[in-house]
Length: 218
Image 1 (cartoon, rainbow, N blue to C red):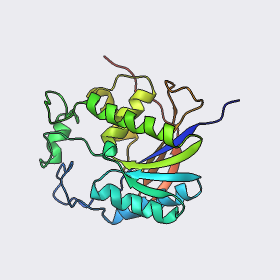
Image 2: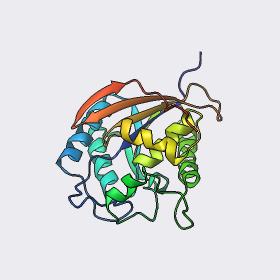
Image 3: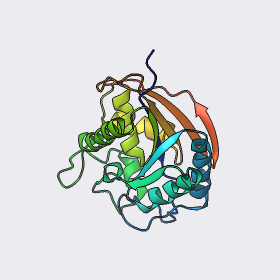
């Protein structure tokens, strides 16, 4: 029987101090708020019981702060920054969050370079996953990243189209800040799709939930 080659825990950074309600994207200096620090500590406590050998994080301050809390609980695991885990690059950056809500969080339609499409986001996340499976075979890895990169990766894992309309339900149902999405690869087949598990993180209280793909409605 094959055992998991790589287990990848994807952590969405903790809640951010954002009193003005701005879509901060890649803007600098957006740090964790008090609830975000509690979420990071809860995620760290969960992962402290896992055989994590490596920790990666997005370059964004909120992700680095979350990863630092996790790394403190896992002194044997190295911490590295990966640009592949970065927040999405979209034109909404710096605008009120209400604008994204009015668009049902479709922040991609009509984007042109240097802004990203869903395919761009998924492509860099899949490069990160492939690198983890090569470098950390038969190991457990933690990676702190952002909501949309995780959502598109979840859709890929379920074999669904990675579109903004299919991303939106995940954003509301499964991607709380501080939550942990676990991908388990059951064999050495490089083309296989992983099993997806979800651990919610509400104000620092963790709970494992049954996670199912959103219904396909075209």
